Image 1: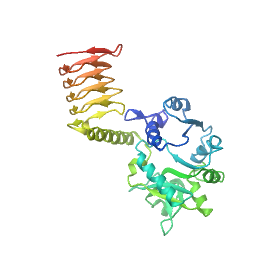
Image 2: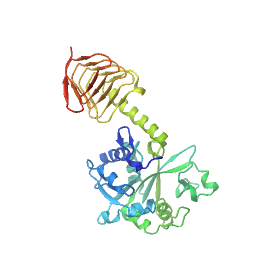
Image 3: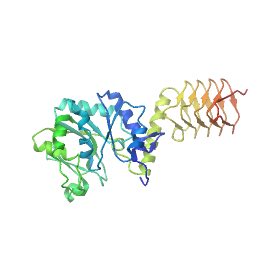
Image 4: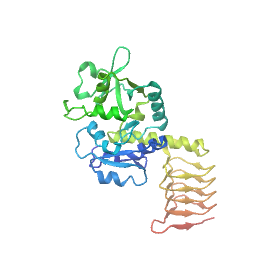
Length: 330
């Protein structure tokens, strides 16, 4: 990421990356959600106040397997299914997690891993299957031979399995590999070796499940999330004249019958009433806009209340950052 900040703290579509993952998990109604923290743990913990999660510290950075093991004490009395998800996948959709859970439950497998296929699988762990398509192992790129590197099916980093089986396998994971770390992926080959059924859930959309590892990938994720939000708003009756150029944050509320011009940005906790017209180039942040308001092109409204039926001329600037103010203009 070329940054000193922990990756999950980077904002994608106006929220920390980790928030998007937790938002996709919450509708599943898990018994408990554990966030494993390590690097910059105080900063990561600080963004979780609005979430019902328990934080667990990985004191030594000794690999993904070690990270999951660090949560064992918090699950000492837990008997049931465990889902493990990376915190850097902001495009995850709840519906795909639900489908994976259903596939796991119906298959009778001890462990299910999510996979996807890439034209260029460089840097990802390869899913090694037998001639019948059954999963045999996941091999990290640095440990793979040429034949394994040619495989295009990769591990998407999401696992479902019986908690006892997962922790039992992790007890047998070693650091005998190219990176000298405990790989979570080793639980696959351990399970297969024990004669357990290991299933795979193949995700058709790689960009929805893969982690964000660069500013370029961050920008792509931002565009995808913005597009989803715009589609949601248009389905509710909001008119957008040039959707790819319009950005409406996830915490914004927009009333029925509103019309948004090109290059409009609405962020923060802005509230837009019904039947408003927002002309091109307008920027709204934490604004309260009454019903039937028209805001002229290239105007800026920050932390300000614009009363019902007001008409703002183009290039209007209203900034009430010090004090929320009202504005009414016929």
